[in-house]
Image (cartoon, rainbow, N blue to C red; front, side, top):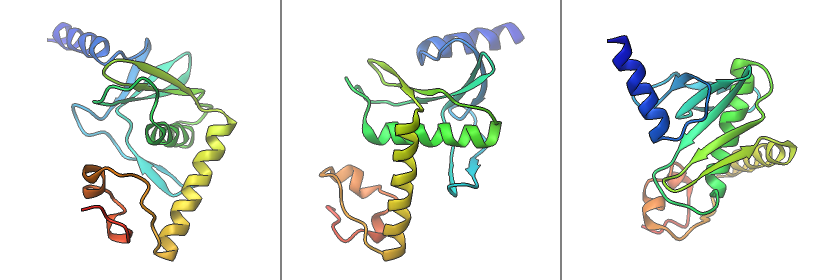
Length: 156
């Protein structure tokens, strides 16, 4: 039984191109614990957390194909990096975005840390003011947006 479970884990790591290291968390097959940030008052659940060389690395698996990392996905991954630092302790050097056709190692550097803080601040301000501005032209994205109730420019 244990041999079969290990075999399944190895197959999943290959299928999702998860980097070498020990998977310490998964939210794909069984719902994982939600991580919270007291500093930013945000929460989230990465798809995987891999421990490698005493560092924790968030891995986010996306269903689409992209030649470049998408900005919203990068910020989602940055959120997970921040959550890991606060919940697991220690420095998180990078996270990994896995698309159908490519993988991207995204450094959690000072620039991305600043951008994350700035976006969170802008989001809080928008919620406080009740003014959320549409930033896309995709009806499907608009229909399922978590900010839909605040947005004055809904597409659908």
